[in-house]
Length: 500
Image 1: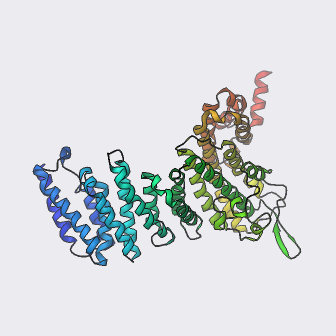
Image 2: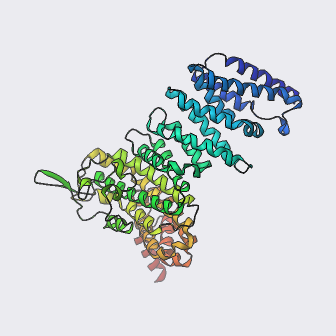
Image 3: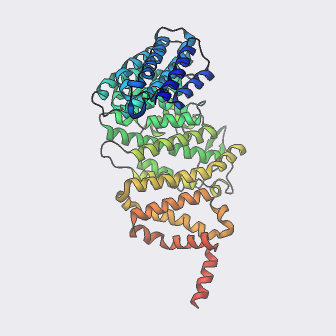
């Protein structure tokens, strides 16, 4: 123990002395790695902080004092590195030291975000605040922590929410908002409207990365917990997300060629020829009570952000359609939001819209190469159609996984829909059986079949005999095809030979 303490004392002294000069990003990363990997911020064996470990504890305090001095009174080149290192201190310092000082650390970081004009400094301070609230979340059961941290959380949202619209700071601001919503969602009650607007704008932004869109969707899924009537807010958000997902499917059908374009007079309009999804889109929107709403509301969560299908009448018919890349990324983010909402549920009892989710899954599975490449259908762009065809396996995997998650979450509430679910699963299991060994990969790629089998297993566990009566024959046929490579015709011939 004495040797370990002496080693840590030596390293901490070197680190404190190195902070006398501004450090660039690579050196700050090296110092942070040294602090974490060498356990320079933790307590001694068995949580000891005195005795032989007292010099280490003293130097830990001096390190924090130096960082706070740079943050509050230091020159501009010192601040980003000091804020970054303070974030690592928040994550790894002993619990007793954290509970004693986290209020002062949060106040210094919030003030740094307010008064500093450099985006890199603001981003570093916001990342440190994200680390601080991640640690607070682990200590909420300690008496007084929830009460004392609520005011800090409110001030953090005040400074972080406007920065979601600034490209240089939006990733760090998003991390801070997400950490606050995870730890103390009720403090966001007065910030839900600007938060939803900024998070939706971040999801629909044309220049946002896919990981940023998904992170914004995960934060958006936490907002219903901040509202007093959280059950109604949860149901409303799920409904709007579902409407936006149907808009995304409309756009995929358009870019992939599932919706034929016809020209009449001087204006070019899009009409649905031999409705590629069998009218499921109209049924789904009627189920979600989209009729009678305004254009933006009828298009769902992102309708006000310009994410519209461009079909129908009114302003939606003349609105420019998002391109295929943006459509695919937004659909991924919306699915991530829906999975988070369904998986975590609401803090109050609320029915999950199983029928609406099932209609969405059925539409997702209808977007198929046989529909997009059917005779008489022409895509507006060959490259866009190729991009849509390339993402079809991932789209189908997402659909099956969403249906499996819904079955696992709703359990017995899924029973009224078991006949419809059984027909859907049976149809795709028969496709596997019909293709035989030679057509397995062509009929349905391996990842899609794997997700289909997982979903079938979940439905059988939930539905029992009610599901088995619809799926038993198709499951046996699928197993014979997968194990022995026999198609449906070959299985019939072998069965007749064994019988006669």
